[in-house]
Image (cartoon, rainbow, N blue to C red):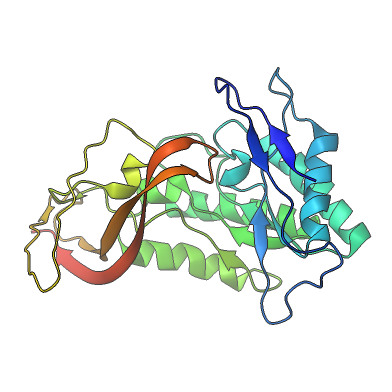
Length: 271
């Protein structure tokens, strides 16, 4: 059965056909495939819990595991922390009834914007991990805006994740949005991934013909205190446009896509 979805501000109705396999088809045995599900909402912005649960049951019926309360569900972009907690509890209970797979996002979105010590970030992560585990769900360690804003080196990430993994009651899934964060890193080509969510961002990709060699200069402006060692990874991406297609965000027209094709680790000490 094809689903028909009317999006706000768009006259064209989005048609989503059923998968090309029956609900009786067994799930994969060599790997687990998780679907990060959206949340159905009423026009007033409140959650339509019945429709939200039916969609999850539809995914489970087709062999998917559920990645719950992730950014796809507008976590941190409309879905509040309290709503995320209720979503995790409801979906975990239903997954237990059906014997279905579920993993839920544990992040730091209960922290207010602003500076935080790593200990506070670890504590926020740990509190959400405990909640997710108590609900009966596997843990997905989500990308943290607080960690990205306050970490000063790759060591900080290792410190946070190391402590959290040591306290997990089972293996967790690590999740991140885009490449490693280093706000001081700039290249004249611009930020291709940022342009996907911020239309004011300018991007000037370098066109390289077969056999051609080009040089892309990169400037790093230190923002840490003198003596601080900063490390990270610079990624080289390819880029192309999808034309006339429906993207994962259900938008029509031309949209960028790309892949990381090479990575270059770097490290420097602020003088």
